[in-house]
Each structure stands twice: as C-alpha cells, then as structure tokens.
Image (cartoon, rainbow, N blue to C red; front, side, top):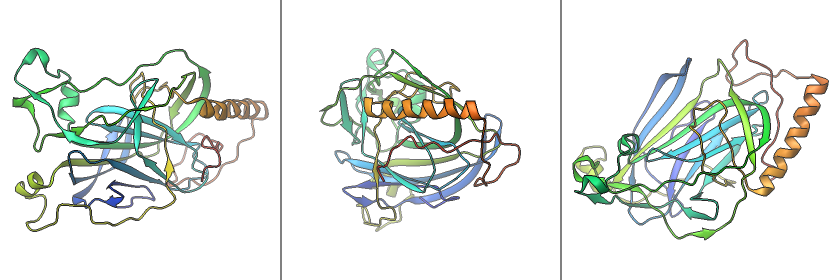
Length: 303
C-alpha cells in the first residue's frame, strides 16, 4: 500500500508481498476529526495459505502513543500501542483466540448454509467479510489499571448462501499453539484531538473472481510478486478485546512480560504528574492546540 505521511501497510503470502489493485486514497471524518486518511485496495487471497500483515509507523517525537487496531472480516483481533520514539516496522502473523491458544493468520473458504437457524446473524461481520482493516490513531494514556475479565473471540458461523460475497474467502482458524495468558492490565487512553488518523483497507478475494470483475487485468499472474519494502519486522502479540475499539476507555490485555513493562510505565506517569515537566516537540502532522505528551516506550528494546 502506498506510503502516506510515513505510514504504510502491506500483506504477504509465503514471504512474498501481494500485488495491490485499484489503490485509492481518500479523506473521511471520524468522531469529529477531519482530514483523516483512508487508503483502500484489492488483493488476491488464496484459500489454505498463511499470510501476514506489515505496518510501518513513522517517528513522531511528541506523540505519546500510536494505537494500532486490526480488524479482519469485521472482527477485532488486535489492539496494540506503540511509542513512536523511532520509526518501526510491525508484523502480525498470528492472533489470540482465547486465554490459552493462538492461531496463525490463514485465508480459508467461507462456510455456507441454507438454514437460517444455523447462520451468522451479525450483519456487521457479514458486510465486512473479505476485508482487512487497519486503523492507526494518535492517543495519550490517562492511567494503567488492573482488570480481571477476559472475552475470547467468537467464531464466524456459516453464512447464508444469499448473503455470501464474491469469492467467498474469509479468515480461517489454523493450527492452535498453546500460549496461556493471564490478563491483568488495562490501559485507559484518550484520542489526541485535532490529529488525523489513518486507515488501510485490503479487500481480498480469489484471483479468478477479481479478474472476472475487472479488478485484476487479464493475463496477470495469480501469486504474490515478491516485492518487499519493509525490513526488521517486529512480531506483535495479539490479544482479543472485551470492548469496542471506539471506546475511549478501551482495554488492552497483555501477557505478563508486557504487563511488567506497563508497571514501569505507570511509575513514569506518576513521576510525571509529580514534576509536571512536559517537553513540547513538533508533531507530524503539526496541529495547534494539542495537549503535550511525553514519549513512553511500551515495547521494550526489541528493535
């Protein structure tokens, strides 16, 4: 996907970057924020193939955190916060199903049914089938607290034949990997007013269907093209959320090692409140009247 203000996203199958078709850039209004940027395209998915998603975040010294929200087929599968002390590349290869298991990102065929009693009823999920949505928002933390609840991801039920989309591909659960997690940490955050957000949309379907619809030119090959523009990928741990991604007090449930980093963050925040010393630095893009924020690295020294 094209680079916008230093932000970029891409998809890969078997380590080959997928071609992107009919790439379009537009602006949109979101919760009172104007001039947000949306980039959308089509990609050819392959049922039974693992894939991964790459995201590039620019350095933004006076932004405290970039909140990265990943939805696939209308299901929220990731919320992560990154301190933009330096430009970084993030790779998402798997996601958490529940408190015990993770599974890799995998394209699969949509299960269909003619029985309305057995069919998926969530119209939001049905409408979003075949869509990978990445949202990036500048936010600042207000507090870090302990929580005691956890909500696993709900599987997609079979979809009525009359409601299926295009090539009928969807996110499919792959092999399970045991990785227990003990959720205990909650991040309270607020959206930074006056700053644009970024949204990347990948509409995926089988190559043959995209070609039949005129989205892929006749004669174009059906596999990934091998291009790769991002390096030094950082693996992201994905944890399902128990609240809406638009919730101002959205939760981030973490593994124990990440919770330890957040405890250190909480100490920094307490020290900041005591000293009330905040350094202002230029923001990309620069907007007047934005609350100052210090940079706090939540991700350790992985990269």
